[in-house]
Image (tube, rainbow, N blue to C red; front, top):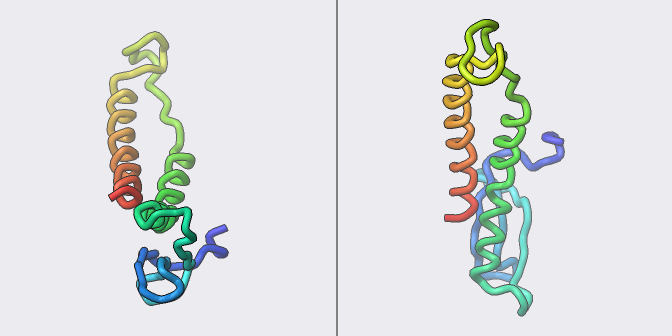
Length: 113
């Protein structure tokens, strides 16, 4: 699917012409344009534009999460309720979780600020 998505970083832009809102790449390739239609407010269209702009980054973050390999504990090094639960696995899990939360937070921030 990556080859179908317009390459480059996407930027949300407000304009004064008939395409009142648009998403373009940083090298000015058009991705999408949309207008106010009497139902959507300017604020809602801005929010829509921000979430669309962040969609590629969110997709990458989700793909990254999906492709994280499972970590096995060390047999005999018990920490929880199984032979494969170890302190090292718990520590590694927490580091991984913090990393994923950082990636997700950047994507959410881009879509909501």
